[in-house]
Every structure is written in structure tokens, then in C-alpha cells.
Image (cartoon, rainbow, N blue to C red):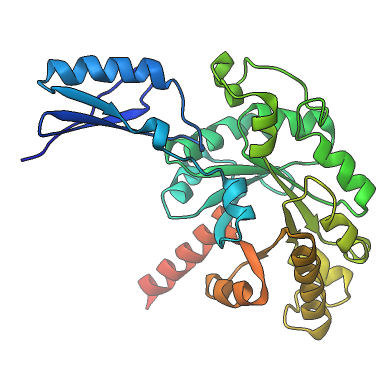
Length: 314
């Protein structure tokens, strides 16, 4: 017989399993981080012993947490979706739907920075990483998104390696970059995050969009820029720039995609793309895209609503 006890703490990092008189503590992770092991373990041990456990063990020291950046850089296929509605509830629905990551769109989305925290919390509640596409590559915009707890940043409309180099510098604390040093924000657990600056820097994902002819011409040099983890194709903008708007099967567009994938492979980074059709994910993966966004919360909702309305009328 196995007795399973779930212990609630002020900081709920562990669950307690009691088997044959031995309580084994399994860490809960939020946003790829383990926090407050010592304090949580002490509370759990006291609770478990009060319930009759003879021994208490923690698995936290043997538990390896993989950040989204590490997973992406490993070459694993990851799937996400854009969050355009600015709604924490819509973000939570998407977090519960099996995506590997979510991306709050501050460039084209309905919500601004004031709606960012709720969406970040929705992802964190269910262990789903949340990225942010910033409105611009200004240092203050990037730093604010990171301080609120974003796991990485997508940069739109960068066209040269010089622009990219300056932008990704905003991801990192000094001396590597110029992110403002503050420890009292959500990203740093309001002063409770024990990680050093280098560890934090290494955990953040840098995504650069390739969506113009100039960016495409410079894609090899952009891919080789330190801090770039993903080259992300904006299909609408890039196809328009190529003179074939929305023609994603055109030879010009397919050739451009191959160019991006080859540049990413040569620089040992990842190629990413947005698709509105979930059925194309496997084909895009075979083409070399490993970081794939499937539509957005608004597009997915509209598609489901239209399908339901058609069924209701038939």
C-alpha cells in the first residue's frame, strides 16, 4: 500500500511520497527553476514525520532542470503558439494545451506590457516557458520583459549583424551585456533567486526574426552573432518582401527558407518559423525547422469557433 501526501507550503516546491515509511520529496519546478530547497525540505520533513514517516529523502539534488534554451539548443523539435489577445485566461488555455512554449506578441498583439505579467504567470503556473516579442529592440523594452519573468525575447525587424549584436546585448547582465541589475523583481524571485548573473544570462533564449530582404542577405552573419539561438522566419513579411505575398509554396519563398535553414545549421543555431496549419509542422521539421509556432490564441479560437458554427448550422 502506498500513501501519497501532498504538502502545501508557503512556497510549494515539493510533493511528498510516503512508501514503506520513507518520504521521498520530489521537486516541483516553475519556469525551469528550483527554489528554496532547504526551507521547503525542512517543512516537508516535519510534516512527513508527523504523518508517521520514519525517513525523509530529497531528490532535488539529483534533479536536473532543463531550460527552454537548453532544450532548443539541443536540437529537439519544440512547438509553441503566439499570444495575441493580451488575455491571461487565453494564455492559460494555451499553457494547458500541450505547447512547449508560448510567445506574448507585443508587436502585433492586442495587449501591452501592462498585460504581460498575467500571461507570464499563466505559463509559470503550468510549467510552460513564455517568451516575449518586444515592440522594439530598445534596451528598456527588453529589460522590462525580462524583469517581469520572460524566458527569452524575440526581436523583430533586425536586418544587420550590428543591429543584432546590439539587441542581444540587452539580454545579459554586465559585464557580458547591459541589462539593468535589479534583484527585487519577479524574474529574480523578488530577491530570493540564488543564481549568479552568468547563470541567468545563459538561461535566456534569443530569437531573431528574418523577415526582410536585407536580413535574408545578411542571414549567415546574423546567425553567427553570439547570443542568437533561433533564426525565426516571419512568413508574411518575408514572402511580401520577396514579391510573392502569402505564396508559401512559391520557388522564391522555398529557396529563402532553405537559405535560412542552411545558415542556422552552419552556425549551430536553430531555424524557426510560424505556420497557420498544424498539419504542416512535420513537413517544416523535415525541411529543417525545429522551433515552430502554430498560429496564435486568436487564430486558434477563431478557427474553432468557425468550425463549431458551421457544425451547428449543418
